[in-house]
Image 1 (cartoon, rainbow, N blue to C red):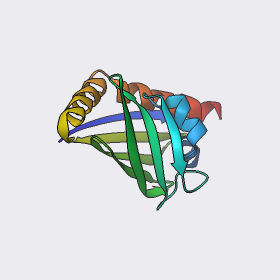
Image 2 (image 1 turned 180 degrees about the vertical axis):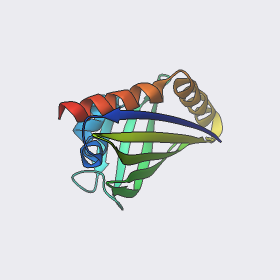
Image 3 (image 1 turned 90 degrees about the vertical axis):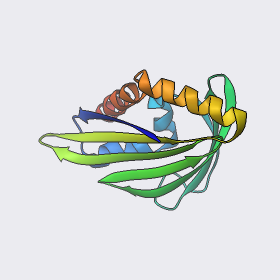
Image 4 (image 1 turned 30 degrees about the horizontal axis):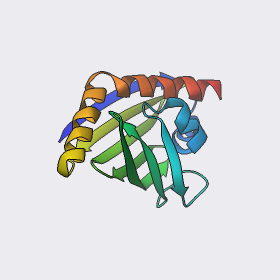
Length: 145
């Protein structure tokens, strides 16, 4: 399993970053992949919530079951399971007059042909800087809020 990490600072608080990371409409503004929220059992992502999302990766329509393991002013941690597995963690911290977000994404191998194609595409997107771009957008959206 490969892991990608990226960090950015924003003129906001960790709670401000958490808002951007947990509200579906705000997530759409920074996510590197367009997605549809098919189902969410709470108003926003919070510890214990479950969601189902659908989007396209490498032109392949895929769905993921998302489980939020932790969501507080220091960390958002979730897993997404579909044709591949994703383990995602956002560490949030005070950084002087700013807040810092460090995102980590780990891709778990997929099953079958679709899983292999999607895993390769996800790894390519992440290696090409998709996570860096997303973390930068998270900071900008949080500052604009």
